[in-house]
Image 1 (cartoon, rainbow over the protein chains, first blue to last red):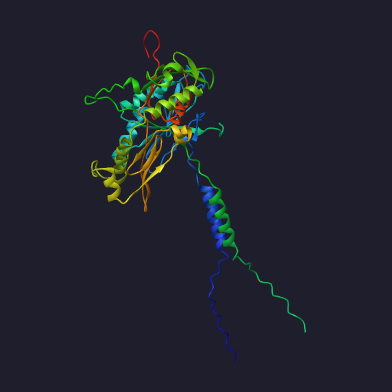
Image 2 (cartoon, rainbow over the protein chains, first blue to last red; image 1 turned 90 degrees about the vertical axis):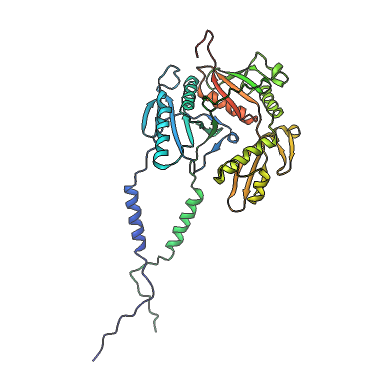
Length: 154
Length: 248
């Protein structure tokens, strides 16, 4: 009488299905990931020499403000600003930033470090100086004027 | 006798798959660059309150420049007030020049260098920055040298741009902790574990007040700040040129 031979136990793990799993995950995340849209306004950045510019550390708590004219180049044009997903008139920027700073302090015990200003090159200085006065009034003093490195094009 | 042909199996070898994956990973790690936004940092003056004392900037440390738009992307500067003994007092008095004018730039740099702060003033700021970085209350260390010894820090000097620009005429001071410190250099405190901990630049005491015409655009302000920073001026005031007959 013949006995059936028992199957041999191998010491390897089949890994040929690994690539299937990886591709499946890849396709799944590619299909489902939604990148947060850059909510800034379309602006023309000013240019500055790289040696006068600094970049902010990762540990800094910042809020970016976008400022432009409704009709760029028209000095009488209305000014629009955006903070996060909210559009607001230029006169309310400082007030909104103060609200945000208070919220960060209340909810996360963190101090708002720097206000990053992304303003269009054509915004008139009277608007900017008014904004500086408002920021001082709200006790927000640290600013960074974002600019492109000279020669990198617009 | 015939050689037996290798039996066909239903598998393919995937041992090289990891090599390919790592190769791709390393390629993208090396080539990917994240867009880092850079800009000019600026500190607004503190809001005046009851305790604020009004400080009048001495006219020997004050330079007032009016900036006016001159077509698209072009700006002219008029030196309103300059220190009486300085280079800009006579050279450009009452004259509109473009912002990039070499005489204006050289004058600003010379004035800034003449009014370079003492290394002690920079060291005091550095000590303050160190205390903030360490999270200790102000006044923890009695002096910078005691802090350097207590924390086992190394004192480094990073040469600034002004040193290159001015060559031999840049003001240099010998400091017991840092050695040779020129105007515009950055003093850095570092330790072996965390690297750079605190830094401070040897600045100028010259204050430049920029008065912009209300219609001058924002680009003009960035241009003016760029010119000032490149020539060693870090203390700047920004305001609007009041129209004739009053009103801002």
